[in-house]
Image (cartoon, rainbow, N blue to C red; front, side):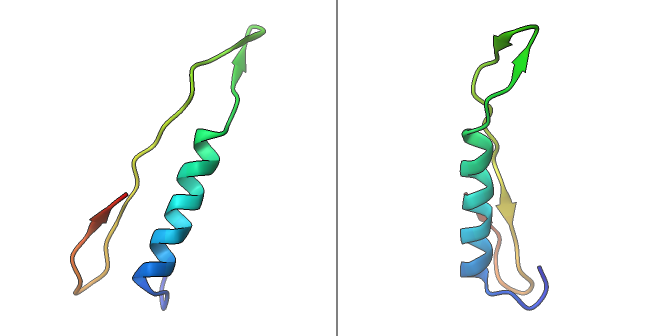
Length: 51
């Protein structure tokens, strides 16, 4: 995400994480357990952050 602030990037990553958390996945008519994801971001020369 060139030319984007680290704060905006963190907000986008959190929106993606929440969207994935809300997914309902079915196989053979059965709902699977909730999906989770961990997203890390970094910005040169700033340090990296984990959400």
